[in-house]
Length: 295
Image (cartoon, rainbow, N blue to C red; front, side, top):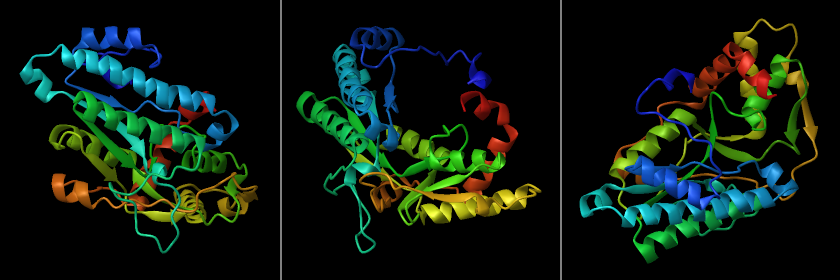
């Protein structure tokens, strides 16, 4: 965030979102027009190894933010109340696993979470909905597909593959690699969130997808293909691929139907997977010191 540190509209506070008193004080001091809740424990593997952190951050943390936001919203005048939004960013994983023959998930799809992570996010979605319908807090929810792009932590698939390939290390792939995800470039996701926070109808949910369904194997092969084209490597990335034991309860497929946000708000992704992965790989190559520091 160094590029914007001097901007008078920017400030940074490091707080625990479960600490409702500190969050309430911060909100009352900063008087925001909107609160965008991106805060979440999000890595499925870690939710299997230690679910408690996910319960604390995703459920109790969301409750804390909702209560602090409600207290602030109730203190506003009518005009400010009308302009305020609490936007909760969620995941397609709350809809559960799909088969190839299943229709894509929509805003009306039932919730069927299968991991501690997705269950905690489903719970947080229900809390946001309840605070809107019970207390009239002006909320919005989005459910997005797998994000990728610059600055993503190496516990996630694409940055792990890029950085391991650059270091000539094994590229792990769960099971047979046929699990399917829809991929969304991070800046397209942000464009959708900002648009929905301004133009979205209060109480609505929006599904945000990249329209780029791929198997994990396809993602790894396409990432390797671009790396080999971009760099003059003296080894083959694809030879580094190593099948590892599958994740417990690994969902087969997630897919999102973004028709609603496209029709109602005019949003659509600007990046294809090919253009997005190219930008992502270039960023990790040019910012080696960043990912080595957190490796």
